[in-house]
Length: 344
Image 1 (cartoon, rainbow, N blue to C red):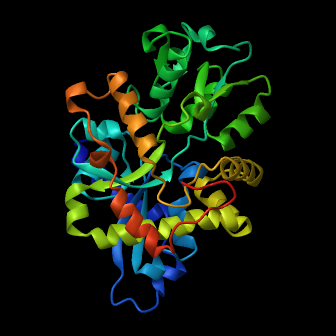
Image 2: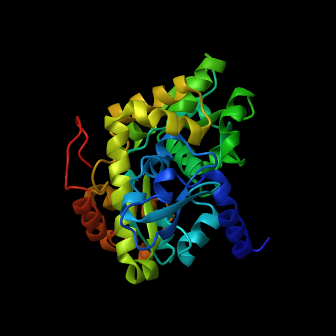
Image 3: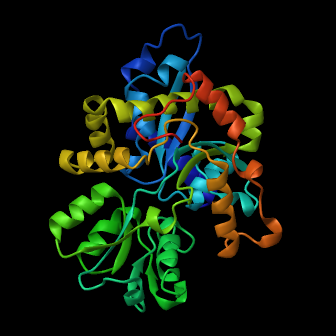
């Protein structure tokens, strides 16, 4: 199927993923509801990806006259996600690598600056060196996708390269079943899946928390095409403001957000509550713009050193992250706050 038609098919199905909220149908003082497609990186989403669902369910989009349609993609670095970003049909997770390779997009808000995942491995594997020759996950985009890159980083910590292991591609939904069934030996799992994995197979090991391996890696930032930013900055600004409010509600209003997150992820309450605590305790979700120039610069430098971006194509922080637009959205959301120890 040509990529253009694949994207259109994804968008056409998105209405079945998230029905319009009562708030969107009855938004006050709106001459017209402005439509926007908001992408999430995994189908179904992980807990960390559910900010748009919270913004929709709690009416943060609607109060800004936004009718948000939530679209699920098969991996943040998937081809359909990249095409949606480039064509301006959805805001999606955008990386410095895509920008360095010529995609005309910019990051506009850091949904989750810090990685929440653990690199989970089979019983008996206690060091990265023992992954030599093993089967590692390449879900969510195959070679070049997030799990492939994280596996490469774990191998690097033991002086190895991606050639020292076998990477197995599969849909993102196959991460947990593949580990349980011994089809793969290592995979990056989100906290709710770590909880479920240990429940089903207690012998599994947490080899490393990825944020400890790469504390300055920029995990998840929403982006939009540069043409879209120039054409309708106000819509993008207001959409980000609504999701900033959603992230703050996730920290502050657990009882309201847990049922929303359960419905979006289709995960049981105990797994969702485990992930919620892990991610709020560790400041995974942003509470402000989600941007830090040092984090963005480190991520760019890491991508160049890995060969993901050619040295002569290395983008600047300003080319990757539209921090000014994020700050405009932050001002609409009431300005900078600190929640617990969380400041980004």
